[in-house]
Image 1 (cartoon, rainbow, N blue to C red):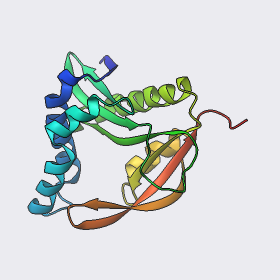
Image 2 (image 1 turned 90 degrees about the vertical axis):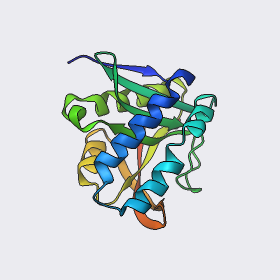
Image 3 (image 1 turned 135 degrees about the vertical axis):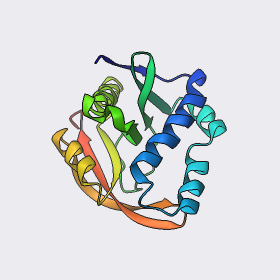
Image 4 (image 1 turned 120 degrees about the horizontal axis):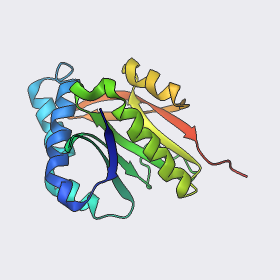
Length: 175
């Protein structure tokens, strides 16, 4: 299966909203009660909010497609919000999700490779991300790509506070 990666445009806002809701629900529906899940989805995947983000220079959406179907995405930001103690120029992977049916087709790896290339092209020092401390599959995936845990931060889903690992991969030497 051929997977393509491209940058998102404002025309993708509705599809990003839909795939964001589907992929987050697929992954986390058993972790939260329906009200908590719905509260988070309404806020995180608001179509107007995603449209605004697509119009900002500091935010980039990468879209993974297979056979002309959107199968996943990554939201990147040049204004990281994980921790104030991260002071180096970096690219934050705010979200990365792939439909369950396509998770064993390397779409996530292709999205991460593209994010790392953007960071290198922009001469940023690193790529950073937050990942739930109990998401062992994702943590293993990030470690295989060379990410290391550098701290933790709280992640709010509705009114549930959880702990995310903050992970970092250096992409440009700090010379």
